[in-house]
Image 1 (cartoon, rainbow, N blue to C red):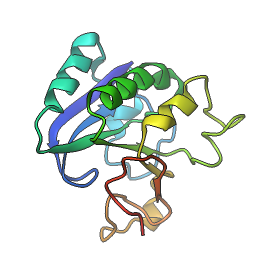
Image 2 (tube, one colour; image 1 turned 90 degrees about the vertical axis):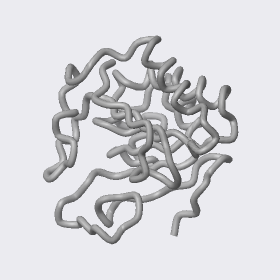
Image 3 (cartoon, rainbow, N blue to C red; image 1 turned 60 degrees about the vertical axis):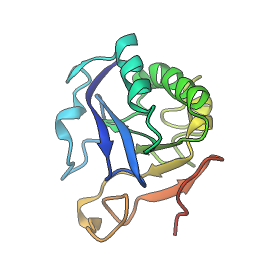
Length: 168
């Protein structure tokens, strides 16, 4: 798996100050995507044990409220195997910090058994996520007034126990 970027003080992708990982690889190719360079699975740099250690270290300060996973597309099958291990490690190391994830896939369609991208890792990966923002970005539904999402069709779903945000 490759990743495009790690932001150590992200305030745009969830509440509070967060650490965010932007993974590479996305098959959605949404028109108007803010991060189109991450569509390429080979973009960026390889995700390694050192990358994981860096993320865990960045999460250490008390002022960091949580971790956000986005991309690219975290739920591409190629990315799930690596990311489930990272999310598990974050949950074990920082049980009180929230975990957010952005996906263009739909929670109740694509991420269920027999869904488009359901793998052996999907259910475990979802078990570590507190807030899931799902749905492709749709240019015609773009709304800059929305909090933590880019288009009106996207949903903010509370799926975990450590949610630090109440979807409206």
